[in-house]
Image (cartoon, rainbow, N blue to C red; front, side, top):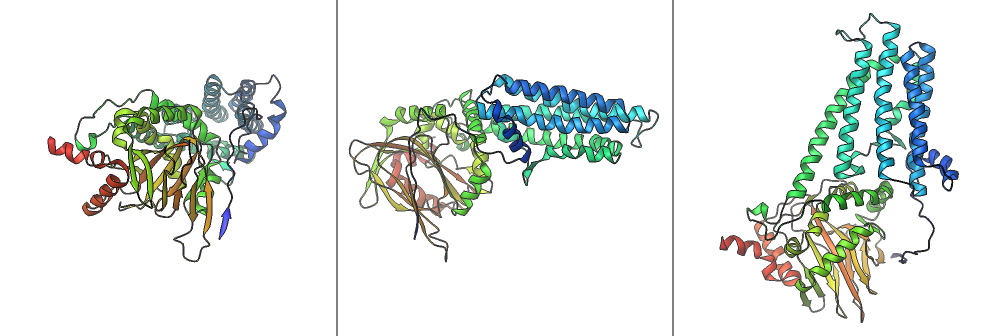
Length: 496
């Protein structure tokens, strides 16, 4: 058997400024290489944004003049403007000079330049043939240009609203081979070189409004999902009033924005490849932002009096708190569980749509407490009784212990070599896996040690047969949360 060693080290407070992962896009890589010498100078990302704005306005002016030569000049300036647009973001990432104002300034510059670009192209085409209609409708070239520009303005506005609600990952563009959708504008010099500006205008006047309609649909979908996730309170799926009010503003959205910033520092494609190569298992030592981790620690301390301890000889010893108690006393955990940013990230790793576990599943999210010497859990799979797959997410909350998560990969893959590994997941660490595939355990707690972890369970199909539900509930009642917590939904409905 092959063993993968894992070295877990605490963050060094005196370490140098962290270097973000290398960008996937080729133009962004070149931009980072060019701006690296500017890190310790007085040049700020806003200076580069201003330069991009100036070049973009010059590009618009050139196109608006009309004529073959000016169109080619405009195309060259467009390529330069688009490339400079990457430099401000890369300088912000590697220098730590990012700011909310700078981000909004960059978005506003992008929107203005892009909108004026289409308007300028339309004006230029109109200047060369003012009496002609590019399309068989009474619309001038200038009108077509501004139609495309207005559609682009709407797209920018809606994408900004989506980003404000669910974070940057919600507006991330598709990329293939190191190129994004917007990189098609790098081909503009070829369009103007072969005198295809008029055809480009027609395509933009048709394509931009169509794409705007798709973004509108995406906006409606995202807003509905985010609103539903934030407003969903405990027991509402079963028609019961929540035992205690669940906060929806502003903690859930603030945490989501923090998670988005953490995700921006990850090369998600690399993480996805590692997840697949390890048979649906991945470990990230640093994932949750410090502010989110601190809120989880506070939540864990708040529900400590509600810990239900269990002892199954030869298999398990420890304490746990179910989602029902967390709903009442630590609602931040439920908000994090339904975080749109977190769920999109996990869906990208899993490669399929994930859903929250049903409201009556006490295991949907739970805290596990290892506080007495010998607390542990033996080798097991997170067997799913649902009709679909169930994925487990483990998050480190408190770890002042020598405990390790030991695991065995490929145990259910005939012909594949078994791989053994061990990790300690400190506060903020992440472990994500398919529970039916990963054979794992937690090693025993030592003297004067403490360990608290959080688990989230997501499913691909929330349906479960009556017999399977009974077995699952009995397992949770005996091994984890106690009969009162597990069967409180049934008892509550009986009383009503």
